[in-house]
Structure formats: C-alpha cells, structure tokens
Length: 413
Image (tube, rainbow, N blue to C red):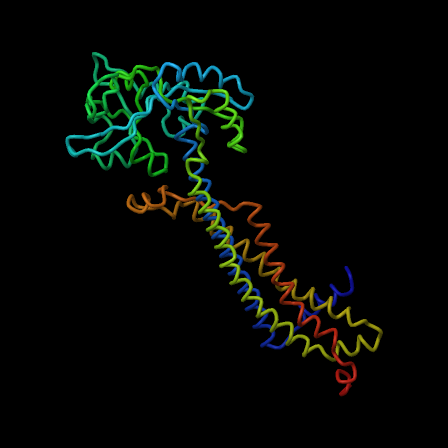
C-alpha cells in the first residue's frame, strides 16, 4: 500500500466533525442515487431494444426476399435455390403473405390482419416459431371431414375479435387469380386452434398463421410462395448479407432485412439512449459538489497535519495525491453502491415483470412487456463517466491541499 493511499484511508476512517461526516454520507448517497438512476435507465432502454429486436426476428426471418412482379422470370423457387448456396445463408423457407380481414360473430366488422401461410418444419428453421407456437403441425391443419382448417391468431387479435380457442372466425382475402376483377374478396371460415403471444404488439394484434397450401387455395395464388424467408449465420452485418442475397436472386427481386425495416425506430432509440445517459449523468455530476465540500472541509481540518508532514519533508504533490485518492474513495463507494442498487432494481423489475403495458399503451411502444437488461458495456460507460466527474471534482480541493502555507499551518503549534 502506498503512503498517499494509507494517509487517505486514515483520513477516511478518522472521527471527523459531524458536519464533515454528514457531508461525506450525502456525497456517497447522492452519487449512488445518480449512478443507480443511470443503471436503471440504461437497463430499460437496452432491454427495450433487445425485446423489439428479438420479437421482430422471432416472428419473422432475418432477411426476406420477394419478387417485384408476378412474371415468370420472378420465380421465388428458383431464387430460393440460388440463395441457399450462399455462404452466410443457413436456411430458407417459402412463405405466403397476404393482407386480409378477420371477423367473428361478436365482431362482424372485423379487423385488418396479415395472413402468413407457412410450412411449420421449414419455418422453424428460419424463425423462432416454437417460442410462441409449439406443435405448429397439429395447430395449422387443412380442412377435413372432422372440421374446418385450423389457424393460430395473436392474443390481442383474439381480444379484438372476442374469440377463444375452438371458436370460428371468418377470413377474407383478395382474389389473386390472374384476370380476376379488382377488389374481389374470397372468404372462408376457420377454427381458432391456438392463441399465441409474441409480446410484440403488432404481431399479436395482426398476425394470423395458416398452413401454406390452405392460404394459397383461399387466395387462389398461382405460385407456391410470394416470399422467401432467409436465416443467416449471425445477425451482425445483416446489410452486407442482404446485398449478397439480392445479387444472387437477381434484379427481379427485392431484399429487405429486420434492421432496414425498422431503421428509424432503432436510430431513434440509440439517440434517446445517448441523450438520456448524459441527462441523467448530470445527477452524478451535481452530486460531486458534495465531494468538493467534503474535501475542502477536510483540507481545512487537516491543515496542521499537512504542515507537520511538510516540515518532515513531504512534497506538495504528496498532499494532492492524498486528497485525489480520498475523493476517489468517496466517489468509488457511491458508484459501487449505485451499481449494486440499480442492478437490484433491474432484477426485481424483470423477475416480477413489473413494467407491463395495457393494450392501448402497448400499441404505442410495440411491446406489452419490457425487461431490464444490464449490459457490461453500459456499466463500463457509467463507471468511466462517474470516475471522470469524481476526478474533476476532487482536483480543485487536492490542488488547494498542495498549496497550504506551512507557516500558517504551524502557527499555533
């Protein structure tokens, strides 16, 4: 242990005046509360971003390929074979997407929906289907003598239609037959075989899963699929993978990925997180004023000690290091306390799912529940920022300690 650190610890353990002790506790508490607020705020926004990202990828694939026209040259099946050979592509799945209307006996006016026709085995390879729709093969069935075809609908859509599992809904889609009159709709009753929840409001309020061939027949779609979903080896650098997929598929196709579909949302969240960090960081900065007060009063209280040590040969820089270390110890105690308290708050909020939204609010924030995610990179940024402001706050009193006049300090000795 170095001598400046030993002296700083002795000052910290010494029985100072009540005023100095009170201000020391206030400085530690103030920094702790500011750091805890930063941890909770960063955990909230990091968890929100992860929840949106995982729900986006969970209900859909990372990259989506679709034809720009319905000509023979734009054959999704041929493009799927080309794309599947690319290095970063792990799996592909043909899918039928169709906008439509869902209605029920309780809600005859219905609600706008997006119908997604899938082959469960193939869809499972490109998305997290089992996370919210396990046993999809038993759920998404075709019509039989035993009953109507089965579909799966989101929990919010079930609430809007006022239906439960086993009830019947009517699905209406445009007729895709070539040469068919515009705005001609085809309707068919379906059995609600499963009500799922992804925690992503748009999916839970609009998405309807059907067996792919069932949706093709309902919409009279000529091709096997109108979208190819693609699973990559990693979600990092998705943009370059999407460009390679587009080049392999050809100019008749367009490629989009989960990030480009939500560029504005993720950019806004990043700006919001950075801004919130510095705004709440002001709490930590203001709390360091108590450290300044503590160190200034300690310098005044320890003038005689400073004078004696100076007379024994201590350099002025020695006292600057002592009070810088003392300020660091006070600030470090506050930072550690704040991180522990903030992490505890994040754990409680996540474990008990305390941050849940009703349907109306969930529609605004896109998710019905937000977990708190404490990331090491966020903690490193918080510790670095806190250490910087504590160092700046300690510098002026430490500089003052190094300039104490030895004659004045020993006048009454």
